[in-house]
Length: 113
Length: 116
Image (cartoon, rainbow over all chains, first blue to last red; front, side):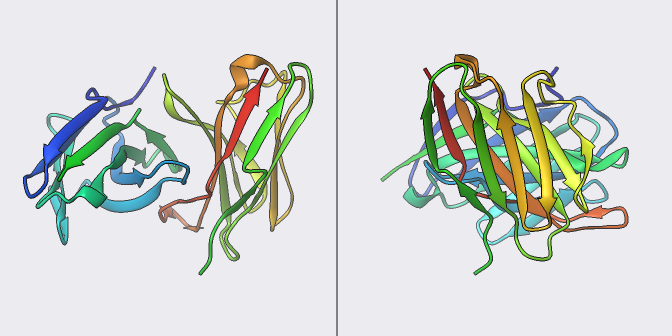
């Protein structure tokens, strides 16, 4: 029973345009959300996070939006660059077990030059 | 440059053999996590430790998998006996938890396991 879902296995975007990656969750107890980026043959690396007390967090070209009522978060990358091509995982944790991160199945982003 | 290290990076073995994967967490981190990545399930949490004590191994098949932390610098994940369905990439991650706050997790490069 996946509590964090990424329904788009892949996304293709032109360089310079916006990439929007989506993530849905089912557990209303989740209060901390993260995005990880993974290149082939490497482990995932932390990208950006957001606490449930906020609805937006920005770091350079990366912005995460949180819609608690819809149990939905999204990652926006503007402008997209070919080096952004990777698999992106969203993850969530909650006050009931703050150590435990629940990961989605990942979205493979391809940014075309 | 502190990193999580994992050995071996690749392992090919035959069904029924024992497999041991090792992880060295980042010095000073007090939480260690084992994940498995498969095509169908994405990243699944198998087990995690805090201050070397196992806190949750509910994601791990108990009959064949075991996870331990002999000391603060070493975590191991063992599969005995291994089966073809165990073929996956196994990631170790470490982090720093203080009170009710869990900082982000830092992942190792993974062990790619193939069981024939």
